[in-house]
Length: 163
Image (cartoon, rainbow, N blue to C red; front, side):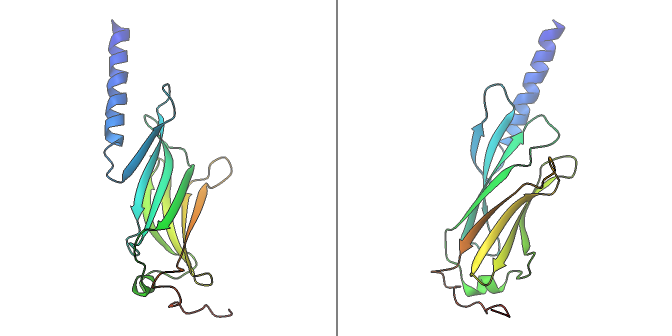
């Protein structure tokens, strides 16, 4: 009888965790990694708040019922709308760029961050997804670029000094 009560409690926790993880409005995909695992690949959509003509899709693993999600992630960004010179003028042009997204991945201070960096020389926006905690001797990261070629912003950038 005690065994059944424990089993019911575990099932209730799994169902609650699954229901809560499905409450994300930005989630556009959820791929199970198998019947006997609590890990799923979640795919989220992010529209750049300063450059709304750019949409990124981020995939990462969520490990329900664990204190920390794995650090692996992938990012793909594309132009999905207009990108103007005014939008580019408003963004941080430093080499470290701007953080446009952050999400906690652990109760132990691990965060998934997405940073936008402008490459003025090639006139491209770079989006780097990275984990703030070292895993297996490495900081996990992924990079995607969005060229400004063909947009209203192309050619409006001042060339960096020394080019």
